[in-house]
Amino acid sequence: MRQEHTRQRRRRGRRRGATVLRVVLGLLLAGILFALGVGLGRALEQNPRPIGERTSVRTLRPVPLTAEPVTVTVTVTAPDS
Image 1 (cartoon, rainbow, N blue to C red):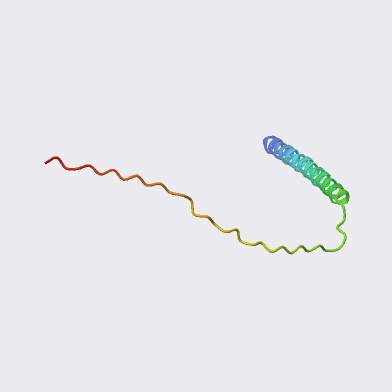
Image 2 (cartoon, rainbow, N blue to C red):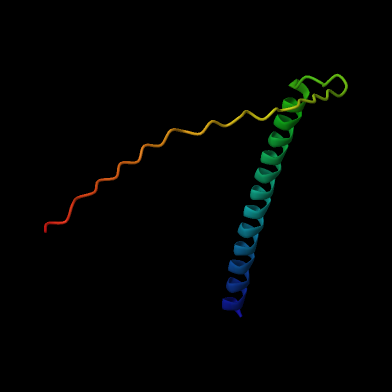
């Protein structure tokens, strides 16, 4: 009987330790998410607000292509006869 009581205590201790670890990790995660949210809020707050829309239209004209000079060298030798 005493052995079972000791085993139950150990199990409870393990469960309690796992629960405490989960709570600590949850709080840590919540703190990280809060810090990221604050950082994102500040970044959005610091950006200047656009004043209306601005549309720009440009027409690109093609540039004429010039043929590049090509030099071809042909060497012909006479057969030995």
